[in-house]
Image 1 (cartoon, helix red, strand yellow):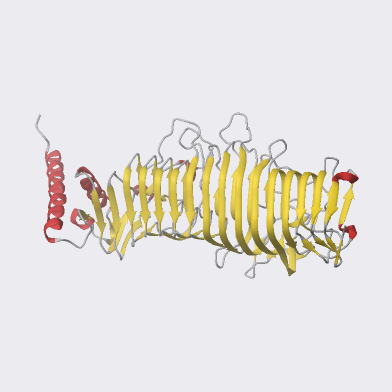
Image 2 (cartoon, rainbow, N blue to C red):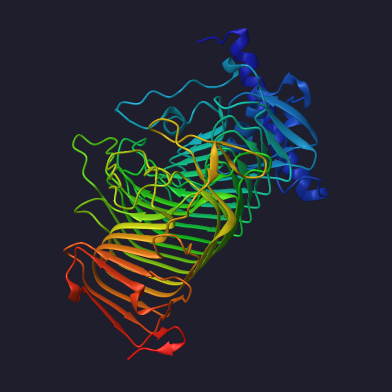
Length: 561
């Protein structure tokens, strides 16, 4: 069968590309070269790098040629390479040299279409699709994207192609590269295992920073992330057509600047989250923007089982709610919503200033959060949401989208804990500024804009209320609490239907009512070795008088029997 002239030319181009690859490798071996061992420059395949001519075809030719040769490095010398969708191949490294920029094409037709899925999926389009991206790979392994160059998605608002999208891949390294102006997730991983992301800088991201979804064995270290949506957010969505857990995820030594959540599990939470560690991170709100919505947010609302989360050594500023732990029952991708579980969480060493929303650990009736330790925490609040009368019920919102301010008006400024078994809190220093304000609710919901000084608008000076409110808690240890409480306020702690509690080593010498106990189920609440203001420090309402015992504490400078 005779070949056409077009087919003959294509064959010749392929052979020429292979010869160039082999010759480049040979020359590097014999004489040495400026690029990495075995590297092929995209310019050798016809890329101009002038930021005007589209270089997608030349870049892809270089990647494919190196892949056919068994693997190697595709080098991007200094220049600006205007590209649409680039397809990664196994055993290929993209090396962006200093001064090199891969710039996203402004034309939508230069990007691949959304892939077609043969299953129903409730997740949003940004979470679900991976082919509509600047750089993407599926079912590839041993791939590297390395700097110090830049990948510029070149957008000025949200909605557009992902920057780096990897689906069902293995052994991935992304290091020392700068990602800017992304309209979608900057680094989006789905069902991708053995990932090392190190030294990546993300600036002016309009969506999430790094999203490992249903991924295992992921290390994220030494990254600087600036994202208007969540900075680092492991997910467990149904985008693979099956429930797959996120497991063995570590995040360390990162700067996470955001208007949303600095580190979040969820909200897509159909699969599990197991063995997650976050350490040594700085979490601020975006400079010149709104404060961050949350610092550490752990959310199971679609049947996920969260187990084994350790968070330590975190510094926050201008983060509304530093800690948010939520077990709910939204039930995405479930015919009948069934709550998951949330257990074995340790959060230690948190310093936060400029907070403006309550921290919370909450389950739902019949499905408690189990085994949470909060220790060595120092938080100062600038203000809070609307104030709720302490005797008014706080709604459960079982199937509501999880947000730190989801419970709306609150009777406390610092912590709200409900439906929890096995809660340990130690060495907490909680306070608020003298100019403490509360958001003014307009209508049924409270909405606020944010001014440059961090104050919400509309807001007005308001009472902080309790420092801590506990409701339906079994087995709680509270040790070493110091919490600022208004003298004219209701008290420091309110406990309703709390069983088996030990409160010790707490200091509240200026507060008349330190603890208020309510509820017929309240029992076994023991206070020991506290420094309190008066014998009336404990107030009991509508509960068994034997529910509380007080021993060996100091009252007005004297020790009680």
